[in-house]
Structures are given as C-alpha cells and as structure tokens.
Image (cartoon, rainbow, N blue to C red):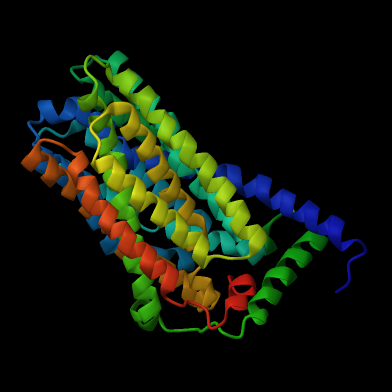
Length: 437
C-alpha cells in the first residue's frame, strides 16, 4: 500500500500514539511505584510503632517481590488472554485496595502478609506494559518509549517523597497516625486509575477509533514489516522461553539491578535521616528528591542516545559500571553531601540502564516469545528486590550503618556489567541495530 506523504503520515501517527498512550501509562506507573516504595518513608514512624528491627523492615520491604515473583508469568499470560485494557484495570484496582489495607496492620506478621499480597496484586503490570508498547511503537522508537514509561519510577520518588512525608507530618485523626494515613490515601489513586484504564486504554492499533484508517494501516504495516526483517529471532514454547540460557542471563542481570536499585531506594530515607540530625520527615523527603531528579534526566537522555545509535547492549552495560563505582565509593564515605551526590550518580546509572535493557530480548526472540521471556526476566529479576533491601537491613542491624551494605551491592553490579557487556545476545553487531522488536 502506497501513501501520498509517508513522512507526514509517520510524524502524525507517531505523535498521536505518543500523546494518547504515554500520559496514561506513565501516570499509572507513577501510582504503582508510590504504592510499592512509600514503605521507605513510612518506616520513619512505622518501625517504632510496630517495633520493627532493621532486619524485619528489610524483610517487609522485600517480601513484596516474593508475591510478585510467584504470580508474574501467570498474570502476563492472563493479560494476553483478556487484553491489556481489562487486565491492567484489574491489576490497578486490586493493588489499590491492598495498598490501602496496609494502613491497618498492627504487627510485623500482618505487614509481611499485606506486602506479599501487594506483590501478588501488582504482578504482571510492568511486563504487560512493556509488551503493550511493542504493539504501538516501532523498534527504533522503543528505547525512548520505554524510557518515557519507566521515567515514572524516579518521578514517582520526586512526587512521592515530599507528598508521603508531608502527609505523615500533617494528617492525623480517627486514631490513625501519619504513616497510616499516608498508606491509606496513596492507595486510592490506583483504584481510580483502574477505572480510567478500563475507559481509556486501547488494546491494539486496529481498535483505535482515534486513528484514521490510513494511520491504522501505516502503523500496523510498519510493525508487521519489522517482524520480518530479523532472521535471527526465534519462537519458543512458554517453558523453553523461560529456560532459554540467554533469558536466564538477562534474569540474573535484572536480579542484580533490582537488588541495587531498591536496596538504595528503600533505605535512602533512613540513610538521610541518620546522617543529619533534627530533620523533619518532610525535610527528609525534600532532600530525597535530588537524586531522582538527576536519575530522570539521565534515563531519558541516555535512551534517546540509544535509539539514535540503534545500539542496545553497550548502552545497557555502561550505566551498570557507573552505578557500581558510585555505590562502592558511597559505601566508603560517611559524610552526608558526598554520599548524596554519589547516590545520585548510582541512581542515574541504574535508571539509565533500564530502557536499553528491555530491548535485548528482541535481539534473539520473536515478539510472541519475548512477551513470555520479559515476564520471566521481570519475575526472576524482581527477586533482587527482596535481596537488596533485606541485605542492607541485615548489614545495618549488624554494623549500625546501612552504607556498608552498598559495598556488596556494588560488587554485584560490577558482575552484572560484565555479563551485560560480554554475553552475545545477537549473532552479529548489526543485528542490534535492526533486530529489537
């Protein structure tokens, strides 16, 4: 099929898709991360009220990912069956209800159960959205589209840090302390987001009433053509997709990434509070904004560069190296300002890694197989979200200093850099340019 002005059609269609889809899924992911990460700020009051040790808090923060791990792949298979609109709406409404329920726990065991169930409820959201983006964006646009989506993670901290701590300091009543009000109020947006998702999300380009027939035809043809251009991709069964050696390597890399990212993220409020006296919770939240502002900029700029060059593997590896060096240096300092600067560099590396990384499965797997493999990578990798926070908690309880745990996380990140840099995911270097789908 020929189009009168392909360039104009390309720009118009790409712009429409970007502005219709990205604001919604970006907002949903911001809500998601606020609900999973606000326990780090709750800890400033919650640990004393529930008599949680550092080890117990680390377990509570990380057990979320056990539930996430167990239900990730089944949830992604359900998304393929029921469609993104219905299933993602279900995920949002369920996790909003569970997130709000965390406000009413009265013991460590109850907190563990609620955090586990929150992971069960949210399982499938991230990999489902990553696959959903492949329905709407061409390979050459994917790193930026994923970056715009995953930029919600650092932005969630930019919003959540001052919001969560302000609620804790200023909202009380009905016998609930500030951290309980914070968890309760921040669970409500997920429920509202689920309703918005059901009403506004479109499953595929063919279903988009907001695209013209010409725009639908062009986008569908472009994405279909890309699938035929990479002779190296393979289609595997569900089990073989999960057990493929390269998928397992990517799972290990993502495991280490999550350990480092969340090991820092969950404990940073307590690191800040412990290194500077007489700070209110809100002031801690304001200070915590800076590293995530830097990380947001780094993520978007690095992903744009990855798309412009068409290179994915080196763009995934180098940020891990930067994060490893920064965390190692952070673990050796006990001064507040240098520690925050180094944590900023580490988080910038960790978040810059994410978008190019999710293009790697498409270098050697078909899109249908990549859907399962991405769920498996995210599921296995997210166990690092349990190990990182828990490990830092163990070190802090043993030494009285959370910074020591960052040294071990740094070593893991360096190993992940070596794997990402030197394992060959595409048969030839030029396949990296044309093969991601």
